[in-house]
Image (cartoon, rainbow, N blue to C red):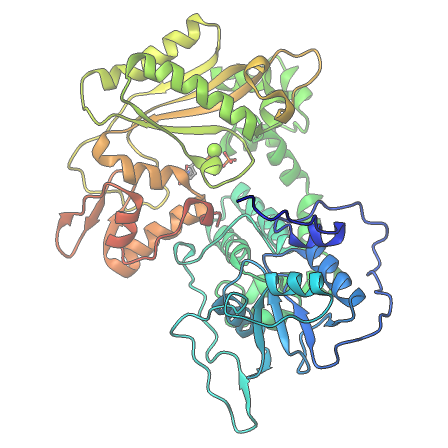
Length: 519
Ligand code: DCT
Ligand code: MG
């Protein structure tokens, strides 16, 4: 039997039904869009549409559409609201949001999925709410009515952990205005090698990235770890003035500007930047034209490919590099496991380099020879622009390092590869006219199979996430975690793991997916 043909939805409903974020149209003005008055047909219902996970554009569109259809839709959540409509949120998510906002809501409040609203829009009137529309509140969320039949939803504010390995931090940053500011301040402290102040700002940025809402009042920072003291003052100033005078001062500071420029060169770190700054250099051309300066091989390559390397790597380019790596590695070690790590594994679409972790289930002598062979092949193919091969200093039964910042002892190579544009999906690359290739920074790390899960966890980042999971292991569990192993100091034994999930389980942590580690 032929299926009944579906009537095409009218355009506005097609848009409403599309669950992805709508393409942003250019904003015409910066002034808030005043909604035109509409006749309210359904007086019993007062809707509030949650922006979280839906986005501003789609929310504005749905609000406008519902108002045109005669629904009363509030901009703000108030006592009069009877129905909260959300998308991609569970009932518990909505309650949690209300809780963080410290909002009191009536116990009669309906929590509904956007599918209900879309059906209402189609019907032109409120449709019956059924189980499929009602958002599920997980067990454990309870709320008891207070004497006025009002409840504060739900009871205590869920505590935000001071450790980023106990928070889920996606790339959906709701507090970019603050995190950008804190990242500038943190970087300035890094340039001054002021570790304590660096941590104050880096941790503030990190916790802000994990919040499911935008801070709009300094009161909302209460109870959130790392947002007190200095950090709170910065937030307060940004809320009041739209910017931080301290950040502006840093951005205009000679030393900061010079360090920012110098460290953007591959091979230039804080020591060299300090030296060049003290010598009075302020621009790259002053440095390059100075005959008395000696550059390392790395720095020479850094200058040579500067423009390509600062232009950052797009995902399409990273994918093309991934194919190059697979072709070369599998030519010599067919059973090798190759994983793209770093920011790209966390879902970022741009990065400063492309990181790969390589291992092989069959531990053989070939393993050690793999990276030299791959490098050799690329050299012959004319794809190798720079290479620094670091031999392994790995010892099997060494107790892991206590230093949360220590890099590992695996064999690895830091490369600059010549990526032919013909290998990149051209629609997605940042290809420049006339250029046939781009220099790309690539890191290859080779680890023994039994270390793979630890190395993967370590090389996925982010930097703050890595610091925190190691700090958590040591302070909360009396364990030492690094890129090679996990050691239980109480039991005096290594805890083996074949997957990242097992490492989290050993640590008693809920599993955090790679794309939730953008702390
Ligand atoms: N890493 C770490 N500690 C460091 C440096 C790096 O734990 N001091 C880990 C975390 C990420 C991974 O190594 C790769 O490092 P980068 O390439 O520097 O970071 P990224 O997150 O991939 O950033 P980008 O997207 O800019 O490459
Ligand atoms: Mg990287």
